[in-house]
Length: 215
Ligand code: GRF
Image 1 (tube, rainbow, N blue to C red):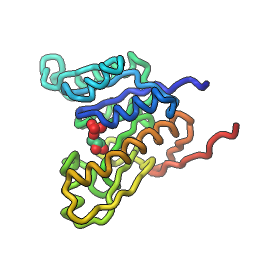
Image 2 (spheres, protein in one colour):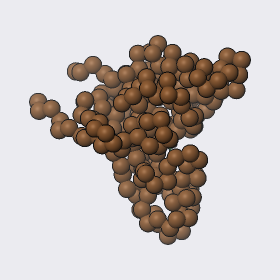
Image 3 (cartoon, rainbow, N blue to C red):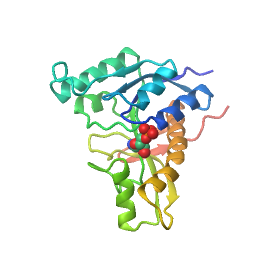
């Protein structure tokens, strides 16, 4: 069996994407292991991490003594990722804007999931129900989710995988989010597995998916 990819996850919310990743790792559906989960707030994601017996790190964003600047905060994040030899970083509902130092340290090795079809309905302020509300307000008939590599520009990096989901008559932000979420869980693990297999090649804005190695 190939060496398992060491994944660090950054999360600020309930952690259902994190849970799907941990479950798929445990089931052998992705050749990876979550080695650390870091959060800026106490949240469901950290609880799930502790339950799974994986190192959970709460770096308190309100602790201005220790982390007076964004740079100091991100240095602490980077330290913990490196302490666990994380090879890939997955943002799963992580709500902090990151510094160039952190993004550059994991250039081409950091992914995010966004609950819409980028480049529509992404960027600053487009998170959680705001995304789905904007999709409904625009009158879109299709939404979905996107896994992409992380660049400094929020939600702006090269797209790895996308999944389309229909918008239905009478949808609310909650019903649309609930329809999209299982697709997120599936898509994120697929992207991580492709990365683990060395099959993602970034060329400018494009991510080429290389064929599977023949047995
Ligand atoms: C997901 O919709 C994800 O796309 C977005 O934040 C949400 C996180 O949900 N970035 P969860 O914490 O994984 O349940």
